[in-house]
Image (tube, rainbow over all chains, first blue to last red; front, side, top):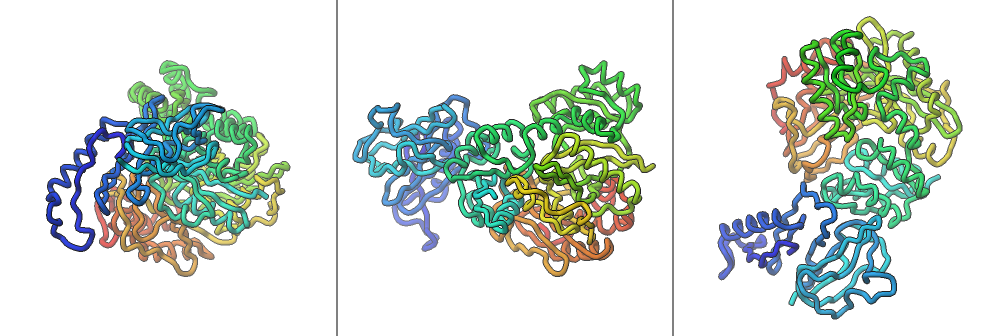
Length: 163
Length: 457
């Protein structure tokens, strides 16, 4: 999840196989309540898109009309990176930098342990440095863009395996 | 010839430009917002780049995002389509500064004609009649009152930065002026970021006639005939046709000559449109020049056989104009109906949703420019245009019959559309005769506004 400060909600699904929720999964009302809570939480966060995932089930909520406050740090979208990993994506179109400045060591390497809120990189757009931040704690499993590469909006940059 | 063109737009016009690129062997890149990730333009283009989230300010109107997208994809040209940044002189100037080819006129042309008050002065300098009004933006209500009293009511208050029908108010009596002035300046400041307005005489029951021009970078300017765009609501066009019906030949020639004079006055290159109001007595006045491709460009293409988007690209690549003035003939009559996701029976309320049961018309003389497909989700963020249904015939009568057939075939379930409005329009005596004026849409709504046919939800 991205920028909500919430614990991941548990969601039930029948995945097209059964209308009955599997044993131990919450009822439909609980699911609806969980999604409603996510939407409310988005109002208090800088996130524009939140994806709640349990197993093979996910619900995505996108805020279409929100404007990021000028100067506010951009929070990267998080997506399923496959294999249970979370993809931390580019918050804007721009140039991806792995370190805080020329010649300085990168924020992270593959295998780094990261905590929620930690900066993983920068996407520069017209001299504005947009921090790439994870709100998922875990271990960095892949870095999917080169230092200095121009990246597009929502392009996956770092894969984190949640701890 | 340009190698790679980035299309900084969406919807049907993005599809149109992608197709023109493919026809020319130019690589196309569609720059899209997150809301348009699954769009037809993205699918048809050679490459695509996501600019940002759905709000246009963070995607289609974000100049820096577009420049990075060009750098990422190796684009050497940008086609702005219409709307968004197409008439933003700062965007064109930025492209010029960084060595990108803006597929359109120069930033100077856009600036000269984008200021509607300055454009009036330019047209007058070219010997083109302009409506009586203020010579410059008025400095306040007192001056607006003085100008209105001098030229006589009704008057139109127009935003200097107006575009797409925005920023226009018609004032019928002196008692209405103060409130209208406050509202127009406030709205112009908020929506167009420029509160300045000017005053112009309002011509009741006029016709909107415009002339398409093409200029190259070598000083050649041609016109491609006129279009009638008198079917409008809230100053936005709904139906356009080429050539204009029931227009005196001498007047037609005067308008075409005047349009070329405007373009030559500023050394214009690329596609442009000079708009006129034509009064009931045949008097014609310059309103404005649009320095971009128009939504209604297909009617001119179908009538003349000239591919305007292709020529925009060729001209931007430095080629001299191919078609000479003597080659250009209006060989057919063509009518376009804009199908929008709007409910004309409920104040033109827009309608977003998922398209199901799509059936697009076809057959002899029918062209449909659209980005729709079955299952497409019409997003709520942008313009409501869904499709342009374009009917061509040897005569106007044949074109209208074919348009009627096409509208009968058109089906787009899942969202409300204005197809019933067009069907009702076609049934009116005035439109059939070609004698309609700018108030025709209101008349149609008064008669048929609350009626609706099934199969069009």
